[in-house]
Image 1 (cartoon, helix red, strand yellow):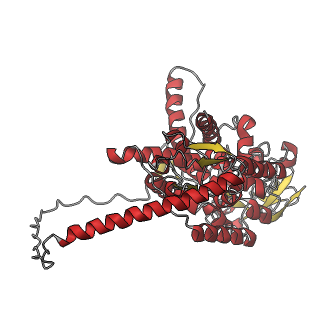
Image 2 (image 1 turned 30 degrees about the horizontal axis):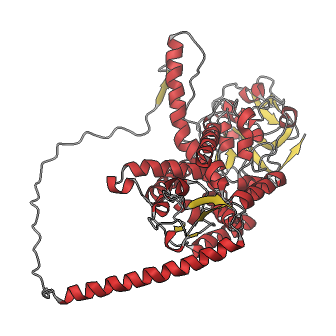
Image 3 (image 1 turned 180 degrees about the vertical axis):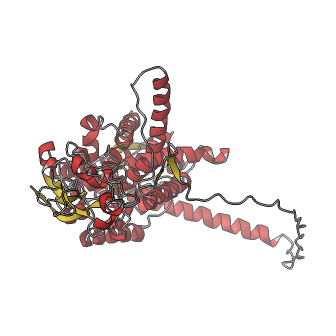
Length: 531
């Protein structure tokens, strides 16, 4: 029953947290956003004391059930292990795992590096190791495109039926380095999980190491009754954490994730989930010693029998004839003359009249962090690069940074859209305190940067044509058009930016018709201010 409850809760948590990253409408966060905020590392970074105390108390009472129920990376490993088990030989599917000693030096070494990186502000290293963030990158980079593709198929058929229940959504790679990291993480975790279950949890994950240390002192634990144990080893071979040494009647509770598989596998009723008394601990130690002596005697007798059998056999000549390898015949085939390569830079035509060139991001001296992040320092010291804000951004503005020190953390760029003053969705979904919740009013008055005009790229100067796009679409009226030549009333108008009124939303940069670089772009501010 305990295992069924655990599995039910794990499925619910995993499904809901995954949907948070897949949802592009922003509706699910209202109901499920709290699930992201109870993740261990985001709660620590957000200084959410209530959640931290609750998770520590939960671990001290029941063991590492956080890893089996709440953590999406942990549950994903269980799913990967099941899938990997299908590809194993039939003989290894029933009892796929085995006990292995703890790699304590590796676990605590990774934890030490993680804490040092956290204190030093090396966010990219922290993001690589954080389990919730790793899952978020996998969900938003690998799973969300599939989810959106399914939505677009439904939108196509809905349009044919004259229904607008679904609408088309563009999919694009927001950051190639982040996509590659997500794919590599997925492959590595899948291989580790398929081979021996929770290897990632118990060797790499810093959250697992911290909770594992606390789990040693948990009140309830799985316990082997040595009087009933028949030494069949089923519990050990069903343990995805590889933490049961059934010969010594011992669990490594720092690695046990309280999944309940061992209790279900035990056919002699020797395993129970209970509190261990001092008398039971003494009895377990004595039983382990007695069993170790019994095993040693049995192994010694076996070795003696093997030695006697070896004496009666004829010695086999060690010098064996070497076998020459057969050389493969190389067949050469004449290749057909290859067609000439098409030009990679195919010019996209708009109705056959004008060339449309892709807009490129300018080189900003200071990156633009989302409104609500308060400052670049606050963003980089709290963000775990989970990609939830990137996945939730409805305007295509947020994308993972490619800066090595801030790798995968969100920055704003305006090639696809601009940061609308009426949108505050990113501030509502961040679980780590990197983006503080702000109201629509606060968002529309928060200055994250200011517009910078580049004279030589501006349409009136470069092409001699009137424009004014930036001024017409500026939501704060920070851009005014003035005569390029004050002495000539017939001269074309050019934009002038009032930096005190500009909030850095990027509407001017996004809607500027100059290509490939906009004639006006936003330069970020290290510290945001309210205007």
